[in-house]
Image 1 (cartoon, rainbow, N blue to C red):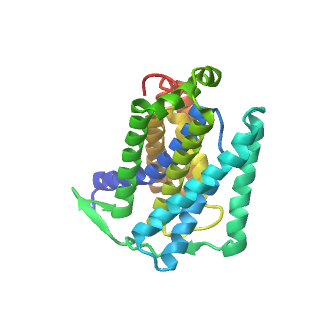
Image 2: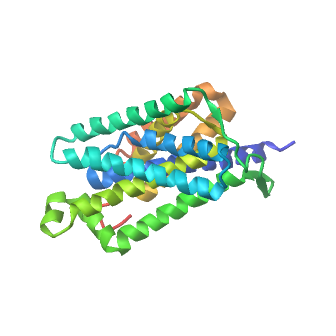
Length: 297
């Protein structure tokens, strides 16, 4: 039997692994908020599509690598559809109009899945269900470890793109001042789809990792995760990529520790209580001075 410190360390590790999923969703929200000042409510639906199509493709017998690739392509395509049909058509209108339109895509995606595959919880036949490694006495599942590594790696790649490429400079220019960016020759209709592309990839990957880790998917699985992702974004600081990562990991740890200490009924109190405390102490979030439109992270 493990000692109390080892049990606490194990729960902390489990929280970090869960938090990597929230972190990916938080980064997706951060991109649309930080660059476009647009809260994309289709993100829960894209997360759900990533998870559901992981189940669908694994059930059909496709190899895991192809399953992940196809799920990411579907998530990216669903996100680009929102950009083309919602944001692009309404970007000159009041901010709440594309927001409501993106919510319509969430409802559309959920109900399409509901029509074709029903509302039942589906069990994912994950090839890594019981595969884990032991590090210093701590048990870490392979999908969870891969999820955490991918979240950090993708955040690093994203920051390199933002601060080391012409596309990244265009994104930051739009985030700082869209009108000035247009006057400086930034091709908005070429740059904005990049935001939705990355947002879709991050979100769909989170859905894939969730499906492989927790082996259950359903049409409404994205809604609760999206609330945690938004909370992680706010905790980390609006517009900060690394803040979103840290916020997601903190929420994951708070959730797992609250479950192990007080039971599942206290999860929301712990998570949203943490959000409230951080906002009271630091209203701009942990990394609130590091928005995408500024020169530092």
